Amino acid sequence: MALAGLFLLTFLPLHLIINFMLLKSEPGPFNTAAHFMATFPVIRIMEIILFGAILIHVSWGILLQIQNWLARPVGYVRSNKSETSFFSRFMIWTGAIVLTFLILHWFNFYFIKIGLVAGNPEDFYSVVHNLFKIPAYDYIYLACFTLLGFHLFHAFYSAFQTLGLNHRLWNPVVKPIALFYAIIIPAGFAFISITLWLFR
Image 1: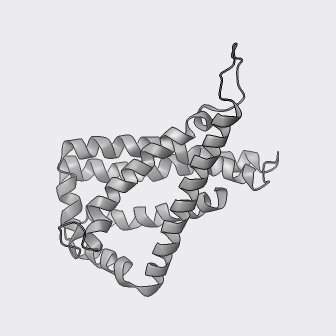
Image 2: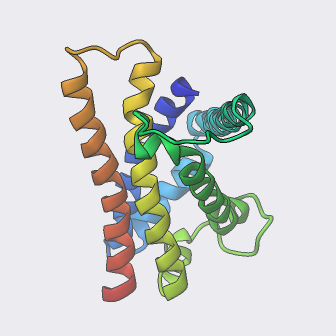
């Protein structure tokens, strides 16, 4: 699960860079990038790997959570202060919300690309701009990316621990990087959303 999660973390910055093209007044650059991502053979192969990584990450996350629940089906009579972080305790729920948003995202874009939903796959620029004119979509988008930030922070940090890199020399470096990543990525997507919603 950690390895699949780290692979997914490498995808988000690329997605964000492409999405910044939505801020341009002309649709050409974004539509060209979207067409390239949809047709270039290497990207198509990476797309399959990406879906595989999502499936592995989600499946293992659900399995591990079920194992944790089954390990302690009855709660403690008296609860003590836990060393488990806030982010760790709610990872399954933030992950579930992110997955729900991801399915909505596929419905709005990927399903158009493969022809399951009506829309022009050569003009995703207009599709995005029209979506961000709907206030409810912006509220959902911003809420989900806020929760994604919480999910990313713990995911980034705990992945290194899972891989055996939890060490006094590494922790002071990994934790600030995890925090920076967990803030800058959601903030970038939120900035695009707010700009298109309020100023375009």
